[in-house]
Length: 164
Image 1 (cartoon, rainbow, N blue to C red):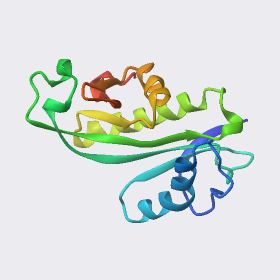
Image 2 (image 1 turned 45 degrees about the horizontal axis):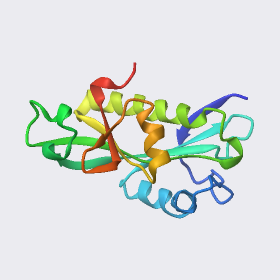
Image 3 (image 1 turned 135 degrees about the vertical axis):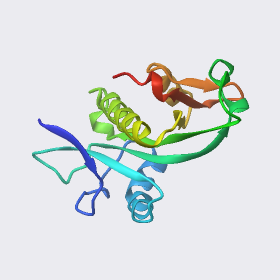
């Protein structure tokens, strides 16, 4: 199996994608392409070269509105301007029948690498995640994300802390 991550295109079979979360399924099936065409966000899909139209997993990145530094975890807010720019890891999902194979981790690191490269070109302090639930938040915490003090489902990772 030779897997790769590529931009979502019309040839990808999104209708059969099932990650076990209906909101994420519907986003990929009905919204991701529309958002991409309108330049609202960009979705990348994980495919196997032997079945390159079959979506194994995906992630979506978007710009994040300016975040007041008071909302950040206190240890991050030091010596920052009043508001900071960043990126949203808006969605990340793996097909249900492929879970347990570390593909979510693979997609996360791919997304973080892309964020780091873009931030190096245009700036951006951190990547932010709005986790769907406590299990999702725990997944991101394993990789260095820190929860917001007032909302444990919003997490961030400074770009400077993204693993190389």
